[in-house]
Image 1 (tube, helix red, strand yellow):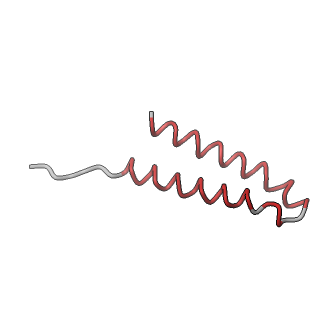
Image 2 (tube, one colour):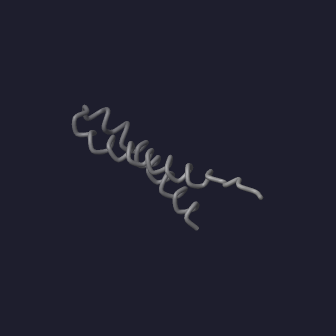
Image 3 (cartoon, helix red, strand yellow):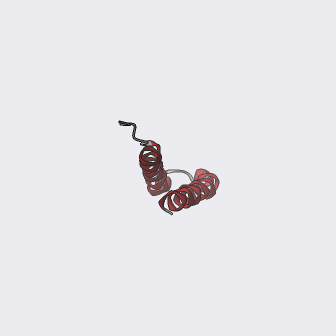
Length: 61
């Protein structure tokens, strides 16, 4: 009997959700930053958020 179960997709999905939550929290806290930091960080955070969401969609397909 083979009792091996592949949890890799579940872990990967969970890890992506955790990272997406971190990025969303960072976006929420941008207002506490200086204007220069906001200008620098916002595009990077948005890009990261889009990549994470794309990867989540790919996993769900």
